[in-house]
Length: 244
Image (cartoon, rainbow, N blue to C red; front, top):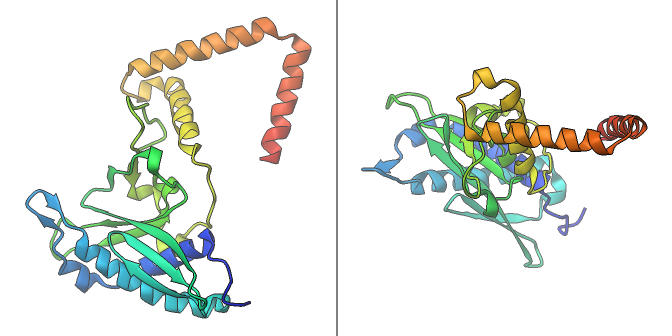
């Protein structure tokens, strides 16, 4: 391979995994970071440390994937903004998003501007000053959602980020591409699941609305379809699910 080897989303995700591993090993440096100032969150030092780990991780990654050995990187806060630099001077920009909190869940980015395939590193800060900093990584879409019964939101959704839905380094999942509209399917499935297990959810007006919509769709479908057409649709759906 030449130095024109394309920087793929998969290789950036691999870089994220290695960066997370190195970041977990810097517990002493994480403890020295000034994370807050009053009520304000200060992630500057965290971002710089993560950028340093990313630079070191790229050196290791190039040993594993020699086809990228001629490509250098520059990492800059906020988050980890990576510029991949080819020998001919051409550049490719990628990003690994950083989150930190003392909670296992926190507000994420507004879905309208979000790349759900983007790598994400989440640091859970300890309650005890001498406690361990827990760090995981995943693609953004793997961490989205508080549960499988999330409610609709009254504006463009800003899904919570859930540390417990992410993987430890030793159990990282392969890169999986998702369309931007993936989040719509997530909320649709949550809405349907809520009305199936209504006794386990706090009641919402949304549940009544989905129940009515579901009832109306079924009634309209049955009214306008013959038994033969229904059987054909069932067969078609079975084939489609097998293909998927």
